[in-house]
Image (cartoon, rainbow, N blue to C red; front, top):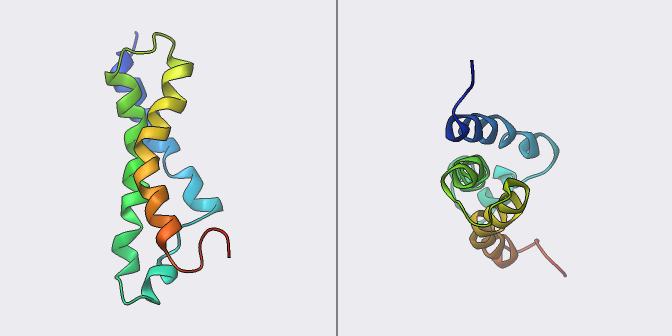
Length: 93
């Protein structure tokens, strides 16, 4: 019994996308200070992390999956990285 590649990537991405939330942020309180609903705002990061598996599964370039993973991760997380850098208290002082 073999699992289709796309399904495997989506399942792994959905499970492994939660791992960073146990170790680091963003935390909702960082957004609450700015009068933004932090518990909703952090879902952008959670969703982007979980979508990396789907992106790896549906793309075909580069051919090797272990090269696609970091590339898809960069493309999924880069816009949210800019948001993080724009937040007061994040990035370099």
